[in-house]
Image (cartoon, rainbow, N blue to C red; front, side, top):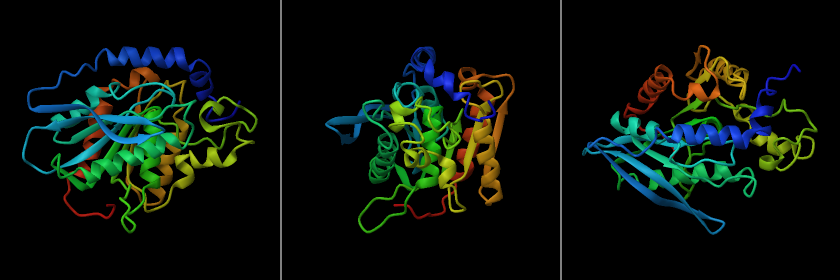
Length: 295
């Protein structure tokens, strides 16, 4: 089947078992073992939706400097996972001088798209509104995620809104996505594999598939994105992220696609070279002081 998204079928079909294994294996290495110069504040409520308190963990450098912030978004097929999953990423970001905020968000199938991206936008607003409290710069906010979390980080990058009237803006400066699903419009029209999250097949709810696809929102005003992807990722094929990166470059947007040789979906998340390069990309776009709109 000549479909760039066919790799996602086993990821969803056998998702609970595969993704739970990934989360628990990765979580084993994510115990909150922050170094003394890092302060961790857990279970801060950033929004309340559907009578559910949405919480985040803040990983904060112990210093008086004003610093940029990074929203850290876990994976899990949009239906499982928690803010602890990428705790090591968040701690490492704090060690490099970022405020890092790892979030929980509403999960499918109880909460379908766009609940997940709406929660991420609320988290950006919370970070911006609480920047003074945590020594953050409200104009220097980025996002990082893996797998489904990468999808949400990239969707943030291409759909952010400037401040309007009294509404807090959701525009971010930069995003990082590892193992990123970038588009759903090539999904077979009658296939209901993603119905648990998008509400039906592409034929039944085409607007949901289009709205959830970062590639469908891409324009020259979007934030830069760094992609990293395993060469042997048979759960989320790399063609979507690679193509999106190429399209961004054509539009004049800074983007980089980092290929990890011989790595699969679960192995790529541990690749220190890719993680280091992605953090360098965040620094490139967030450590500069220049004021940007978005509040």
